[in-house]
Image 1: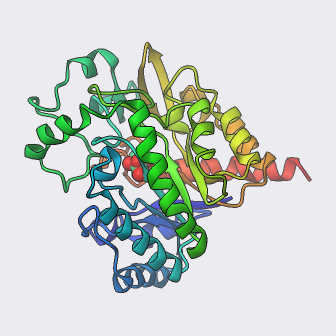
Image 2: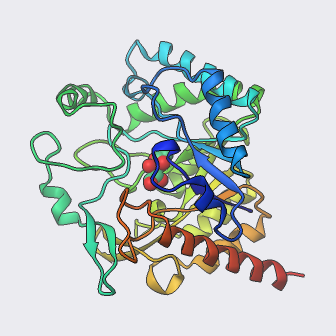
Image 3: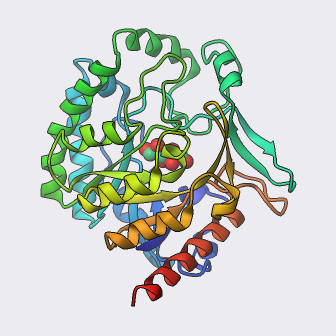
Length: 348
Ligand code: DNO
């Protein structure tokens, strides 16, 4: 496994120089943030990003994300134009030697929480999702702050998007995903870029919009849409682990043995009843996901790809992008690194 860290480009308050100082850190997970969703990424911009990361003594392990335009998810006639652009991006990333691309297929909203600064008993703050609060939230009228929401969509566009999604139920979304996958995976294979779909976060419908990348059965259906290791998964312990029915380490081992795990996100969540959860510190004792089991599962299928500590709490007075501070993610990285070292030595 290769330890990596998400970096939001030159506007990130955390410099690459700091990331490099985290023990065990090898790779960077990043993207180009100033190209509107749906447009192709030009070669020059990709090369420039690559050079910036390499000049800092690391390399790009994964591009997270190349976002999928809503017209593709809705299945509008304009989707073909956006799919062509997506293919161009993949070809360009392949030419630059980028091995993995992470993306998601969640309608309108990416990861969603009800509070971004919930104070935990130790004084740190974390992102939480409360089922009852979410039920009362109305993205069309309320003041909603969603950190994962793509900023290139304006709130004014929301009503129109919601109207389009009235015709998209779970099966229709599957159809649109299949259409997309069948177009792009052959190109990804040719370009040598492994695709890694991110599970829906949280892994159930929200705001009346369908979500399908949610559990073992659906991940199985997904990998069977196109039988290739290039059509793989980002196994995210925080997203899949926030559904009480998902046994994350078991799912990870299962899809790892099928050679479909192209990226791993490690984050812990504490299930707090119903469909509610709090994000917690990474070690197993603080959350509902057993991180040692996660590491053991990866060792079982000799995982050689990238893993990154996902969302951290805000600790030591740090402020910044919710979930993406330096300190707690760095602690998570060293913890995971330690578990991996112990597990490797155990097996000798
Ligand atoms: C949250 C992230 C997601 C992820 C996208 C991938 O912090 O894991 O926003 O980047 O869903 O497309």
